[in-house]
Amino acid sequence: MKHEKESNSDGKGLVYFIRHGLTQANLERKYIGSRCDPGITEDSKQLITERVRKGEVPDINSLWVSPMRRALETASLYFPHIDALILDDIKERDFGIWDGHSWEDLKDIKPYRRFIDTGGRVTPPEGETYEDYAKRLDSVLERIRKLICEEAGYFPLAIVGHGGPVLYWTSKLFKKGDEFHNYILPGAGCLAIEVTADLVITSVYDFYSKSRD
Image 1 (cartoon, rainbow, N blue to C red):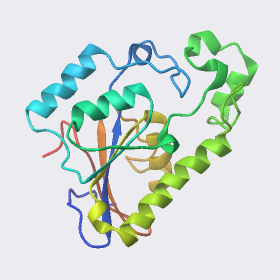
Image 2 (image 1 turned 90 degrees about the horizontal axis):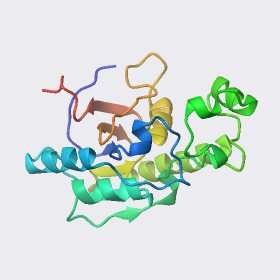
Image 3 (image 1 turned 120 degrees about the vertical axis):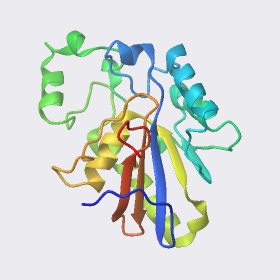
Image 4 (image 1 turned 135 degrees about the vertical axis):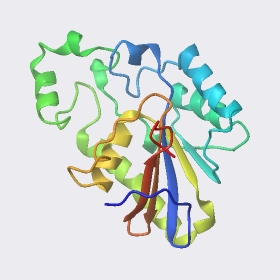
């Protein structure tokens, strides 16, 4: 697949998938789902503020944001003058009682080992099933598809959320072996994907990649 940098055009929607800035828990490699609700670090705030100062921010028409504090803080720094639509469907997964714990904390727990071995298909204790998690993330893609068909002026769209959902969406949009399949965004990172109403990709690039022109 040829990954070109293109702007939105008729019959296409340009979407910027943005991960929240890093939290201290992220730095400590802990699971942070939809139960723990930390804010982003001062270093992340400074990184985003500097990008805004330099004008290194996507030019958007619409903004969707997860209701989690780390996403709200990130969105308010990147897009302070744009009204956001807050959507529960783009939250990170609920990891139940594992939320706030690290791999080191959990590694000897049999259900957790099955969770890792099955790519998250096992339900964390008191947490969200993989089926429910996938269903709500699929609904976001369907919403994008319908907007491309019905309201082209809605785009470009920025979605400020979490790393887990971006991994899921890129696993759906890209085939295995593609460089963007299961894409891991860094803190405050941004992946730009332009798709047709059939969710066929016409261009993609990492907005903050050092290799970007």
